[in-house]
Length: 114
Image 1: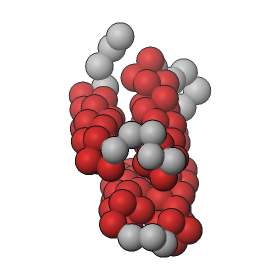
Image 2: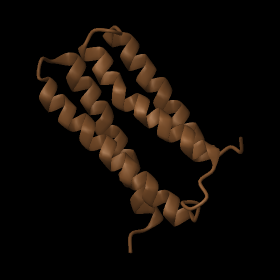
Image 3: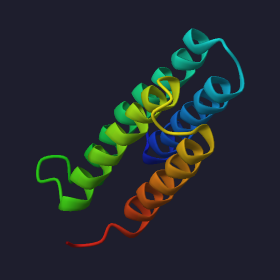
Image 4: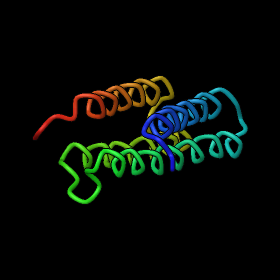
């Protein structure tokens, strides 16, 4: 059986992969390689996030903060599309990604009641 600590570390590693993907996308022309890192990180963070919820015993009755994190996860997933299509400038994409991740971290650690 996987431990709570395992899921937590996997969740953090997934986010590291997401940001490696952002960096690769915005610093090179190899968008396919960058998107592999980004997508792999999103998948790892999603699976480990649901594993954390199950270990914490809140998977069946997910609180509002979980739904907010899922929405922000979708934002992180969509930001590279905006960067590649030059809808948003690269520096702004990075700032939005950092703010999004910071809010997600806050929600994960504080677990506020909405």
